[in-house]
Length: 125
Image 1: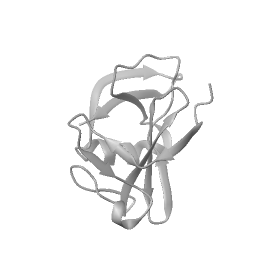
Image 2: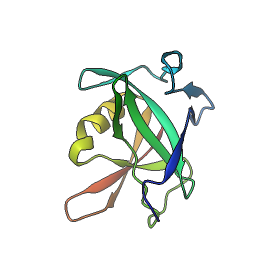
Image 3: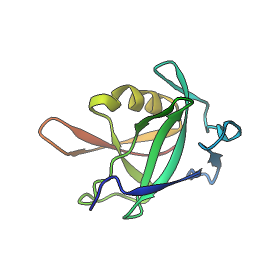
Image 4: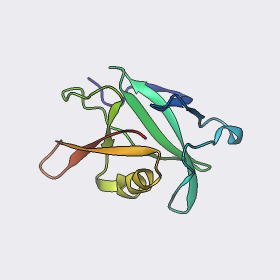
């Protein structure tokens, strides 16, 4: 399965059925729980689903894409509402800002994806 195959949507629904509109224009930059800042940039999210239906989250700012927060690991199981987050390598500052935002909840679950890297399992707060 191609880990990066997806098309981007705009709504992101949380467990409490709130919806945040994200992405395509400045009027859509409403974040649940506040804003996040990465490398001095005010950021928001765009969402999609990978080919297997799992949530994909892209972190955006005015200059473009900051990072793809999620990673698709189809060979590993998830519970409903969970998604894998790339919290290693160049994604460390982005993942830290997202984790601290209150928008996401770290489940404490980890999946080893290489000798040196683990993906964290998160859900929306």
